[in-house]
Length: 120
Image 1 (cartoon, rainbow, N blue to C red):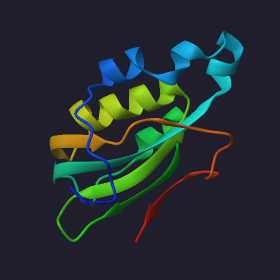
Image 2 (image 1 turned 90 degrees about the vertical axis):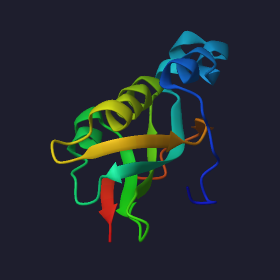
Image 3 (image 1 turned 120 degrees about the vertical axis):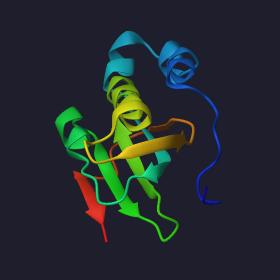
């Protein structure tokens, strides 16, 4: 995995349980935006990220020279949890996912991205 992404062996379930959402007031937690970096390993290049758009996730992804896909996700905790699960266990029809690694969720004051894009 790239040195740009902090390694996290936390599962999606643990991320939800230990997330900052638990300390926020209910209204603030629903509106809070989080970001995380990711890297997906396996036969994953050339696959689509329609799921991110479907979930309302913003950010980006790109193929790497090592054959992985890296990127940044931004969204609510529910959106992030759903996207992480999809990246770890489902993926697009042509993908064969070996593993997906995520940095910790970081709270953001506002989105840095207006949409989800594929960088080339």
